[in-house]
Length: 350
Image (cartoon, rainbow, N blue to C red):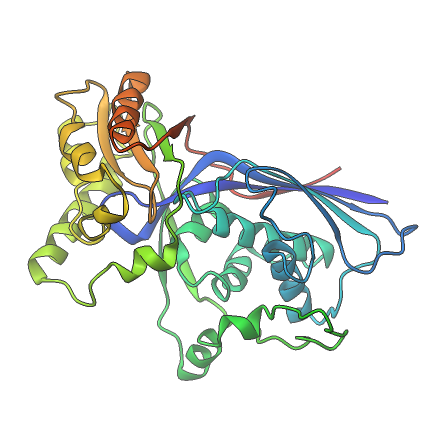
């Protein structure tokens, strides 16, 4: 019998002006406890779920995102099927559809699961290549895999590799119909090498993270469709200037309140998504360092609706103000007081 644990942190992306560029690894986790027992006869993994989204997660290994990702990794390595006798107990702390990287965590958990099941020992760079064939934006998956405050970009690929990366997702992770046989989706396209590149920035130890999580979902597809197809040069320069300052400012101790607050302003995604999140314009305009000492900055987490606030103190007062603004819109919220995790996704043999 073999047992191991896969543990993946949640993430927040964008962080103000860093749209599709930066990601932050945070202390809510997706955890898989995996047992492989050769005395058992089941050919596909037996899944059980607890925690967030337990009623929504598919328990069929050929429909579940995490196990489909694992099978993709195995098949890219020439291993056509799961080992016999797998059972997986999943505990999830990451709410679905709230801008905290739930799908990115599921993808990274699956990539690491496949690597562990096949004893492949892939490098983190190669694991990221596999993840980016599935989750086509690097910010969340990179932060979940690497940990910390991370910047990432996609490499310009050769025409041949560009074709491979552009393969429809349904061909990378085919959804198995009820009558699927052993041959279904057996030869998926392997990822090109070096799709994504990343660097980890510093993070000042004084900076704490508050996640205010409204009790409704915003789909990533809907949030992306709200964005324009083009931007003015003025707005792009505005974001580039602030992002260049922000990545260094968040690493400096003690934090410079004025510098960080202004550097977290955004003109690329938040203005276009505010209609999806009632109360957001008021929150962004009224919760400031002058009204709430200790606050460093405030922004949408990913596509929302979660609001992320960075602070050195008075976290409860900041959270209370934001939740009260949502209450005016008849929206209830949960609050999580989080810290930035540095270890990234982990596999631990037991």
